[in-house]
Amino acid sequence: MNLLVEIALGHLRTRRRQTLVSLTGVALGVGFFVAVAAMMQGFQSYFVAKVIDVSPHILVKDEVRVPPVQPVEAAYPGGAVRLLGLKPEEELRGIKNGLARVAELDRLEGVAAAPVLSGQMILRYGSRDVSAQILGIEPEGQRRVSNLERDMTAGELDDLFATANGIVLGAGLAERLGAERGDTVTALSTAGVVMNMKVVGLYETGITEMDNAQSYALLKKVQVLEDRPNVVDQIRLRLADVDRAEGLARRIEQRFGYRTESWQEQNQNVLGLFVVQNAIMYSTTGAILVVAAFGIFNIVSTVVLEKVRDIAILKSLGFDSRDVERVFVMEGLLVGLAGMLVGWGLGWLLIELLASVRFDIEGFVKSEGFKLNRSFLNYALAGAAAVVAATLAAWLPARKAARVDPVEIVRGAA
Image: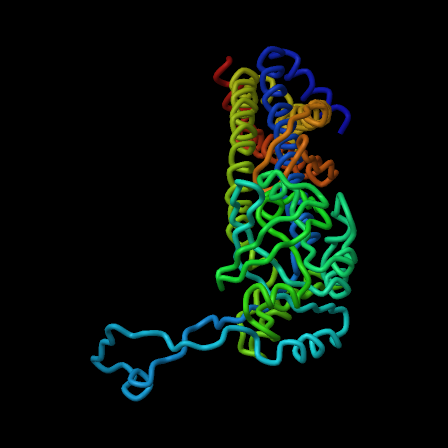
């Protein structure tokens, strides 16, 4: 085996420039794969962690997934019937027996549940009017289903009890209003109720949409503001195991009949973009490795053409076809391994360079720099892809070398 390696290295040394170019191509493919994967996966993991951290794992809404069938459609299913000018039946929105359902869900193992009433309102402070969402909560229950109190930058959740009409604002919402803790803002609900509310706290989750548009108050106060006494329109659940969310959400919807969404369903648009993003990443970095593989194919093919007489001599000395094939496959393998090692170093340098970059952006989430995933799995995947591509690229011309007939070559030379 040592002799086969020496022969392979000798062939590569005779074409140093081409070998260096191919090795560089493999190294670039591996390095960029590691760096880009670390950047993409880092942001995706950070976003998912943020969503799981600040949003309910399961959300039960006071609506149904499929509208009820009209009586005429039920009476004549599939008939040539067209309904025009239908007016939806007016009914009181809200989850029936909401608090009882919260208690039932709260008894499930590994599940914490809390009632919520949500509504839209206009917040006025001085001459500024800002549209916002208000969530009526019970502080004790909210602590169990979210990390709101941990995210508060001013005040405490219990301050809602100490003030007649207290409200907690998102940091972005407070900035848009120009209000601070201790200020009094005027809330005008869609029901036409006006209420003066004192800002008792501010919070910042890092999710831009939430920080810029959401506020919290006591459940009873929001029921008064929305003119919906004793009504709950959401049940928020937090699970000990977030992977159970999708299956449990389906079972709750089947039992209660209300639309129930897991955190995956609530964020399916963004998670779908991540799939496209990963496809682009793997195809782009894979293309670099494919180009490098063509370079290796070119080297080995050229060596096979140039060393036909040497191959014939090796076979005459007792080397069989498998030995010859191993020599040329080993050339691709050696270039792949060397490119993998250099690429790992390049990938590490690129990751450290990205980690040193600092910037402030606001998109789905706030970030002060790149979020990077330094998993060894990315190094292993990139290295394996490089070695496999290089070996396959060398195997094709190696098969041709193994089929060389030494008798014909020697006679032709004579």
